[in-house]
Image 1 (cartoon, rainbow, N blue to C red):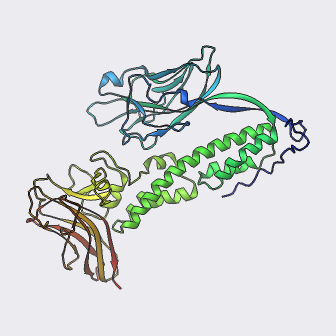
Image 2: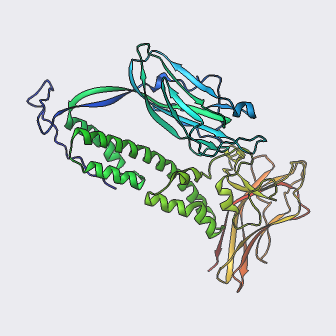
Image 3: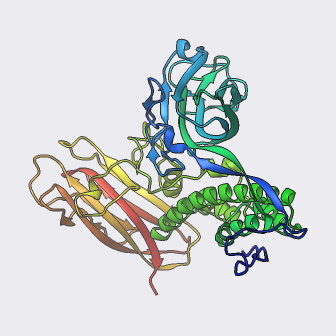
Amino acid sequence: MAFGALLYTACAQTDNPAGIEEPTPEDPMIEEISYEDCTAMVAVDKWGQAGFTGSWAAPEVDTKDGRHSGMAEVYGDGDAVINATGVLLQQTIEGLQPGKYTVDLYANAMFTPDRGFNSDMEDNAEDVAYLFANDKKIFIVAKRAATTARNPFYSFETEVGEDGILVLGLGKEKGGTNWHNIQIKELALQVVNTRPMSEAYAELQPEIDALSDKALPADVKTLLELTLAEPKSQENLEALKLALKAAREGAQIYDEVKVKLDAMKALIDETNVYTEAALNEYYTKYAEKFEAGTLEENDVNALQNPDKVTGWHDAISCDEFLLSAWDTNPNFQDAPYYINTWSTEGDNDGSNFHVPFFEYWTQDANSLGERMLTATMSGLEPGNYEVSAWVRVRAKNGYEAPAYGISLQANDGEAVIVAAGAQIGTSQFYLDTFTATGSVGADGVLKIKFIVAADNNISWLSFKNVKFGRIR
């Protein structure tokens, strides 16, 4: 995508060594607002008696001045917290220059359901929680949710008086929420400058060029293109700055989305054992909207990164995708086996066996119960097929080598032992890629089976990258 150049004419300097430009009707002097970054004066860890939200519940954020931080949090259970009103999180910044400031804050206010207490607040309430900066106050969207995929941020203006004091924070007008967090994104002093209009336009060109290579929401891209096509004037210059701000924010969102889509695509490339419906539900429809620039807020919030390490037994969307062809479900309480997105031993033992992976687990001292784990693929051409999988097992405590009792089978083909992989260091883990073959008949059905025998010495079966293909 190319927005084109502004086609400005720079003022010659050779006959004006002092650098003083004379205004002309074609290039008048204009007044414009610039922003002096004061973000560093806001502390990320001085929001009263706040803790920090776990990154699994609300992503960490970046401030304008380059700090990476968690969200400062106030959380509590029960009616007392839900019904509380007034200021919950705040900090006071001193020593600021008097003037008008732009404030950008990340913030969430939520009621966390399924915790044994309740709230009458409706989802997306806009009359419960608010942000404030000195005398300026704006309401934010309060949600019914236990986590957030993306922290929204809110931008508004406020005044700092001669005392140089700015008080920022989050409060509640009425009851409804029990989880609240806040963090600074940017604090900037607005400064009025006078300069030639051509210089102001020229200053924007590098960002326009950079955004020309970015994926953007279609409406933001159109707005920017239309604004660039307008004649140069002070009014249109301000409109262009607003369009660039929208494009900058849209590009940031689409950059984040692309990371998640790329990770999901990598996962898809590692396996072909899933249903077409799941592929569309958890990848294709989002990828198509991304390319068209039509992602909506609920799409952005729904997208998750399968590479993300979560809290124990936390479910993310890759669970449903990976399990779509298997005889189980992502409900950790009832499912016989499920997707693990929280274990990290593969990060440090040299195996690179990372989440997400399938897991069938019991206590370390026990053997797994007898079971068959089955994926069913339909609509295949008859013929001979090969199935491969990357398999890791943990032998139970007190075992005597070798590890045994688990095999991989394709339909009625020969069952291949998958517990006999290479030992990972001196641990009780064994890991390797295994391949089994089998025939698909006229019914076009291939059943991929992990067979756990009653007589096994394994406490933990995990596998990933399951793939099948017709042997030609």
